Amino acid sequence: MASPATPPSLIVLKAAMESLGQWIEWINPNRAEYDAVRHHLSGIPTRESAVVIQSLLLTTLTMFEGVATPSISGITVQPDGLTVQWKSSPANIIRWGSVDSDFYQWVTTAIQKKIIPLDGAGSKVALPSGVMEAILQRLDYYQSALTVTQHCLDRLKRADTGSIDTDIEPVFLFVLISCLPLDQLNALFLLIHHHLPAGLKVTGSDGRTIAVDQIFQPSSDMKFMIEKTNFYMDLCLSPGLPIFREIALAKTVEFFKKNLAIATVRQQLIESLDGISRTQIAPRQQLYDVCITLINRILRP
Image (cartoon, rainbow, N blue to C red):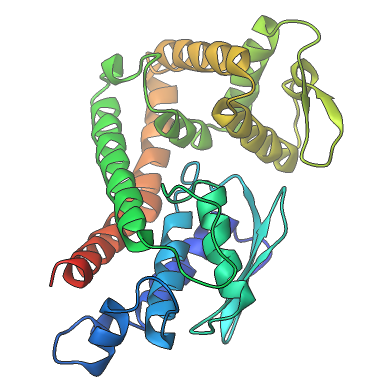
């Protein structure tokens, strides 16, 4: 089991990479497992196709709602599988190769949470058609988003702030925010706080009503600031609070354009961005490249 201090996003990335080792050698026409995977991608899966789908669905989690995977509260790894804990819904249990109720629930969760772009409600007794194609579509999107993000990071490192605008992908802004030191993070949230309408409220995952403008007041508690950052991401991605998204993204863009003009701030951010590129972006790009290649071999032998 990973250390409790390790962020869930890094645990799920490591678990997805390790799960690939179970089946990567199967995707070869000379292996008996190849047909067991390729001919059982819907209906009742074989053990082999179940492992592949479990692993690939885990891979789609590695950038679900951004690299910080804000909807996931924890990942527990066991010798025969793992458990995914969600902030607002029951956990998913994955036992490698087991075709049981937990397997079908894992697929259903991926469909219902829109982790993969597949219509329907899922099934408790069979694998719906189109799962592999939906996984491929999602991973292609992630790869494109990472390419754009890396391009934006490279421009920022050249002191080019033209890549930051209000129509920017939120995932890129989330990467930038995660690089900010505590004092800069407080300054950003205070700027947002001053422009939020009084009385703006949201219902939390535990059912409590939260005054949004109170959340973004300054704090010296790093753990609380991380929670606030996740809250910011959740609200920006929520379709139910467009007013928050509009204000938050506009003020975040304004904040970065102003502060990146300051040499010391820009240098500190560049150092953090280099770390993000090395530890977060590059490993995901490599993982998605391998998975996309393998899926295409399965679907188009």
